Each structure stands twice: as structure tokens, then as C-alpha cells.
Image 1 (cartoon, rainbow, N blue to C red):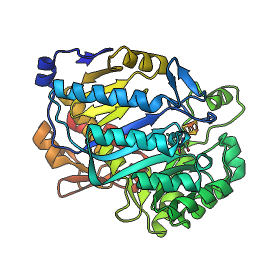
Image 2 (cartoon, helix red, strand yellow):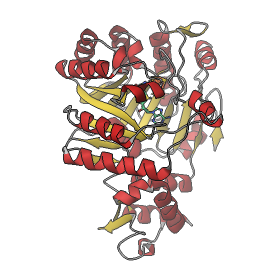
Image 3 (cartoon, rainbow, N blue to C red):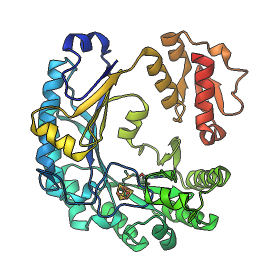
Image 4 (tube, rainbow, N blue to C red):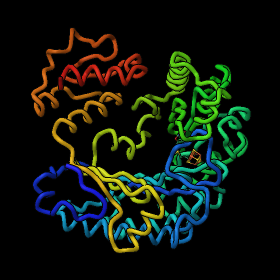
Length: 406
Ligand SMILES: C[S@@+](CC[C@H](N)C(=O)[O-])C[C@H]1O[C@@H](n2cnc3c(N)ncnc32)[C@H](O)[C@@H]1O
Ligand code: SF4
């Protein structure tokens, strides 16, 4: 069932009948759609100008978010979607640290006022290494932030240039040092398979990252999207995309080097020290409930999905008219099962086939022997992806879906 534009539609009664209440934790995502410069590969909903629409600029953004929070809470009450304190909060972007610590705290306080935040909850913020100073990191810690995730991407100046990053390796190193000094748990995002990246450059990036003593590392294969600067460069033949086999080799190198340094993979692209997994992101893969705020943010309450208008003018304009800038859909049972398979097979904790069988009438005995082409192993009713299964994750997911859902 789809619904669009300005809620309420469908009626609270219809939605109440379709919505399946869940006992899962509630999480909150705040999207900050500002960046200093757009990186050549980026297709996130982010903008480089200070002002994005009438009444919507960096200085007014916190109050627009407060408006959205107020309306979202009323909407939850009207639609009888239980209000719970947030188990985690994540500020992502864009570059959230282009807002001042005061503005970020103002938004966090509004979340506290609206839903409450659980004692000891994980509160993360994404940052570009050159967008934040030591003093600001201390202020963020004081305001309740517990974790910062830096977009480091590479330690090689040449590759940072290829990616159009504004920071230098030295700035990244200083940012990590200052964040740790401020008492924040630190994570690094890395990208492999950048055009012309040599294997030794990637090895250097992973080695250096793993020696920094961070709590968490994410490694992403570069995706080149058509309507980005890199997409156009690829089209004109100015750059070459790395082959799948080369990206697979990069992944295996990262997995081996990070494991040797005490990082355990817990999701296909994420490694952490024991107990330092990102609980907010784990919540996405475990199908928790979450509300996203800001242009283009997605929300997920059990079988109900909705998303904010991504165009800043439409988003702010609708809020200013007193309406929620959302549209969405209610997933069918089959779509919910597909999602469960897709998410479970990305995780170290695996896909609970026994549970799925109970819910779906799927047949565990359909798994040939103890394995699925060496991509996953079945133990105690749970299907665990192997390293090969992580590398060929899309194929594994498709095979399991075909087998269980037909
Ligand atoms: C939402 S971005 C925001 C973080 C911050 N703005 C930054 O770039 O430093 C989160 C991460 O997604 C990854 N990412 C973004 N676009 C990507 C792409 N096209 N391919 C692979 N990884 C990408 C980058 O590692 C980036 O750090
Ligand atoms: S800084 Fe991050 S969000 Fe902004 S353009 Fe670059 S990758 Fe995208």
C-alpha cells in the first residue's frame, strides 16, 4: 500500500489495521544536508550552498528540524505508533559538523524533549576530518555525543585528490587524535577501488588505519553513480572503474589486516573491536524501528516505511505549511521476509532460518548439505555467510530468496 505527499493518508484506522506493532528498539537519524565541496563520487542528498530554500539555511535548520519533530510526535500519537525513548541517535550527512556544536546540541536537546534518549545511549556524529576542531569535539562530548565517524577514505594524498576530498592525511591524523583526547569513540570510513589506486596504496591505508587504535572501521567499495562528476568522467573514458575481482582482493586484504589487529567483522562493510560495533547501524540491519529527520531521510516502523521529500524547497515549504513532508508505503508480508533475508545475510550473527520458517513456512531442508555453494554455513538453524558469501553477498541473497520465497 503506497501513500504519498502530505499525511494523513491513509486514515489512522486503515493504517492501524495494516501496521504491525513491534517491540524493537527505537532509533533516531538526523540528516544534515550541507557540505563544503561535493566529492566527485558522492550521490548523497547534500548541497554546497549556505542557503537551500526560502527560510532554510544552515542557521535555520535546527528550528526546521524541531518543527518536524513536533509534527512527527503528533503523527505517532494520532496513528497510535508507540512513543519510546531513542536507543541511539545518529547525525549523518552531508557534513553534520558544518553546524556548530551549539546547533547540534540544540537538535539533540529537542530529540530529548520530544522522545527522550535512553541512559547511556550511543550518540554518533559523522565528520569530515577538516570540518571540526579540538574545542568543538570537547563541546560535542560535553553535549552528550559519544562517538564520531570520520570520512578518512585514504591516507594517500594522491587518492584523496582523485576522490576530491578537501582534507589532507595530516588533518585526518590530527582530527582522530583530538577526538580521542576529547573522549569520543572513533570510527574511520575508508574507500577502496578508487580509479588508479594501486594495491600497495590500499594496503598502506588499511595498515595505517588499523595502527591508529580506533574502535571501528568501515570499508566501502567505490560505487560510481551516473549523475556525479566521477560518473561523467567514466562516461568520457577519463577514468576507469576497478574490476570486481580487484575490489574483491582489496576487501580480502582489509579483512585480513583488520582481523590481525583485533577488529572483527560484524557486517559486510564494518569491523569493530569487541563491544564497539555501531549499535545504531546494527539497528538498521536488525530491522529495529527508526525515524529519520531532514530532507531525504528514511523512516522505518515495522512494516511501515516513509521518507522525507529530498528536495530542500519541497521539504521546508511543506513543513512551513504545517504539514509533514513525507511519503511512504506499507510493505507486504513477502516484502518483509525479503528484507529480513537481505539484512540477516549481511551480518556476522547470520540469518535465523528457524525464525523465518516459523513466520513464512519456508523450508530449511532446502539448504543442500551444510552449505550453500560455500557462501554460507548452516548451524543450529542459523545461516552464517562465509567470507566468500560476504564477497558475493548479492548472489547469496538472491539464492536464498529464490530457495525460500520462490
Ligand atoms: C554519508 S558519507 C558522510 C561522511 C562525511 N560527509 C565524509 O564524507 O567525510 C559516509 C561515507 O559513505 C562513503 N561513501 C559515500 N559515497 C560513496 C560511494 N560513492 N562509494 C563508496 N563509498 C561512499 C564514504 O566512505 C563516506 O565517508
Ligand atoms: S563530504 Fe561526504 S557527504 Fe559531502 S560530498 Fe563528500 S562524501 Fe558526500
